[in-house]
Length: 452
View 1 (spheres, helix red, strand yellow):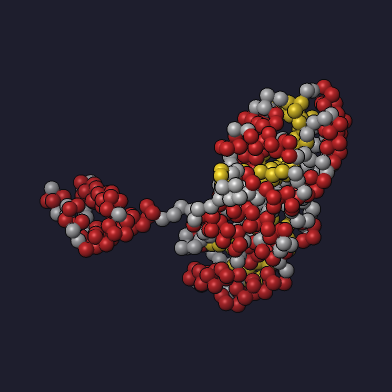
View 2 (spheres, rainbow, N blue to C red):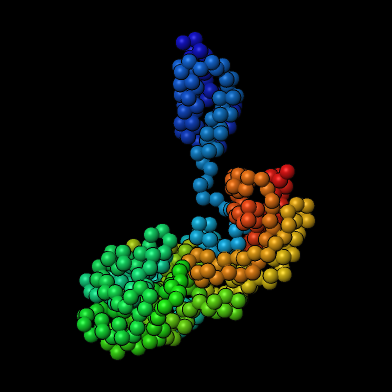
């Protein structure tokens, strides 16, 4: 018991200058919680019979401060992406342009006309924000921004096909990351799935037969954004599906997913269908992501016929999945880059896709020279983010032949600003394509500390 009696009381600890400083930094109530926890742990250690000495006041308060720091350390933190995967879903997908960040900060730092009509001086609608930009950019009659593309598809089906049949090809009953399955989304929306064709072969006749036999609300197509079906395969062009659908007097909804507004083939990649092409092919409603190849903040974007978008905007679910002011400000700023023809110069995703291979090699060589370690080797970057499956871009990697590569990756992840790299041929490799040039000094400084 004597040892327990030697543990200082909470009140006496709170009177110290160190505790008062901690109280000013963290707040009295949080300090009390942490301090009591430290003392409880100390009492438990003494009562367990362990041979320990009672720490002095400063040690107790130092332990308490470490607890407070741990409690308040953000779980969401910036990392350096050296994997070469441009749209890395686990690392937040698309980084944002400087102008997009400025627009979002301006919207967050003050009041805005989010739902206020400045001309009329009365309540307005948030759905108007970004709509005109999307109309001008794509040629669509109407547009709506929601919080992500899964929500966009759910909303469209709920508004246009609840309790009714929706025709879709077997080959397009896809599952993407996070367990998002088209059949599940259709079920939750209240739509009734009618699958046509087979897994590997679908013909226009399959759609024609289903439209004759079934009383449907619409036809849905889903882009193969994160997988390929190869070999003995057939699938009609979107324009062919549109013609059959329109002959039956029904709308065609296209879940495009990736949201490409530029031709990826220009940059040595397989052509990814663009939003503009889907509209020209006859899709009446198109859903796509804001944070994939569009390169903006997370959002789901719906464009298409005004009469169908009016129904979608009026549906009760539209309020539940609506975009907030930061998203609307960010999407608008990102779209302006495309309208001004500066996406490859300003949108980080497209800057990374379009960067010259020689420039990447030069940076990798600079890293090696500064470290005086490793070698520069040829490699491949990936677009990622459920876009362009199996497509890669030639790149140059800094390869470090370290012992215990997985342990080295763990050390990189534990840095104050974590670095995420990968292992290739038992070496830890770093791809400059996805590392911002301004991060180069930190990468070199961090590696110097970890390398032998």
